Length: 401
Image 1: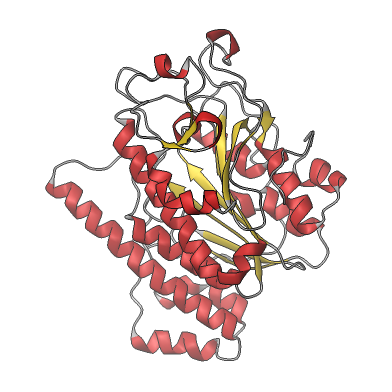
Image 2: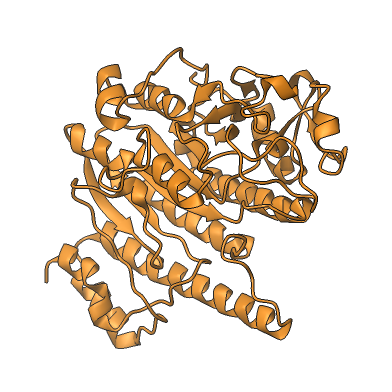
């Protein structure tokens, strides 16, 4: 049996997994370099002004009387990181974690999660369902690139890797029930390909653990007669750590690019506890990657991207609404951390976008483009014309060592 057809047709083995917002796909690709790139999509629109708080800006406190709780972690030049990022402070001090502020995609005004995520993952100027993902365009444009494995644990599609360049996708669609005989068949079929055998079995294990987490949370919600919302629904931190561990295990081998998503960033009300949970989850995910990558961490860039930022002013329910300018959290030994990078626009009403949002002063696609140029030696023309069509790379933002 052909191993590629076997993985693609995994559902024919009777394997299935309930569609759930608790679950996330993992896309992996091999390439002709030694450096690694991890792209984490923060679905729901992370509040960059809470992630990295500009305490020096005199308008910040008046815009956020409740969210500015005084519990931020002081870092450089009167900035403070969100308390949920405290586990990453050792990385900050080691120069392996930082924030690029006041950035966005070209998406404006609609403030739709669907359209915003489409622009983010397609890397285009506007929503375009035919464009495919920007990582897929890179795979198709660079000689020696292959999308070796793409595991979709659950049914959520990673659009960032979609497109004509070849890649595999495993997406079972109801509860995984794999008998010992079927598991043995899987081991025998992939016996001569250790990488695929171990990756497939590990993916099955992660899918089972995630499904159990989802079932437990759903049961708890039912007992409380309160179902979780789609946007805030998220697994307990250990589940994302398992996904990060799986990605790291592949990146230690032939994989050079990994992408997955972390949900739970839509904080319209009661933002403080919700965002703390999400930031803590992200911190654990990044640290799991660091620990799993070992010495490869020094050759790795981790980019945490979100579809747009949130309003500068908190709303009446101690949350924030859909905005424009936001922030990119980044980590990895291949990048220059210990800094809040980017051009700060100010929070005075006249400086805000439409007098309500943080004004974007940089294109987050350009930051990703410069990082890929430094990691992989890609030509600027390839980045600006093919990977991110219509991109103005502008000035290098100072994220590379």
